Every structure is written in C-alpha cells, then in structure tokens.
Image 1 (cartoon, rainbow, N blue to C red):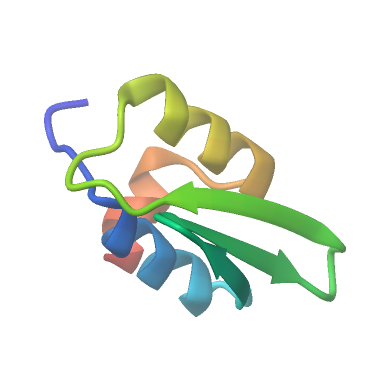
Image 2 (image 1 turned 90 degrees about the horizontal axis):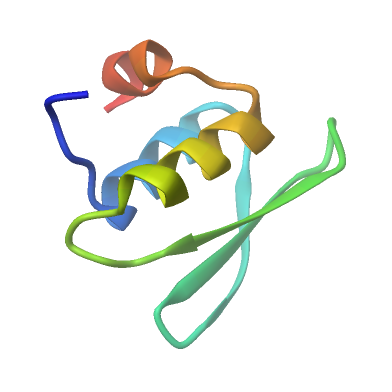
Length: 71
C-alpha cells in the first residue's frame, strides 16, 4: 500500500457506498449502514494508520482497490 488516506477521504468513500453519518464525537465520525446494519467509527486524522484503515475496510467489506476507486 503506497498511498495513504485521510479520515476525511475514507468517510467520503464510505458515504458513496451507502453509509450515513450518525454522529460525531470529537475527532471521530460514527457511520451507519441501515441496509447491512453495520456501524463504523472513522477518526478524522490527516493520515490513517495502516492497521486502522484495514480494520475499517474489513468491517465495511471493501478492499484497498475499492477505496482507491471511490476516492
């Protein structure tokens, strides 16, 4: 994985796949997909760490390639 993603970019991509912003607590955005009944938390950092990004994508059922296309 050569490219890094910000929290803002990840939220934007997730919103395109059907997630809606539920609420925000500090620098963390809580998203929810009503169809799949999945909740996610994305920190609004300039650069997400590799493990954090992979955990978010795994829970959302997306791959890095999917994320690159959505951003």
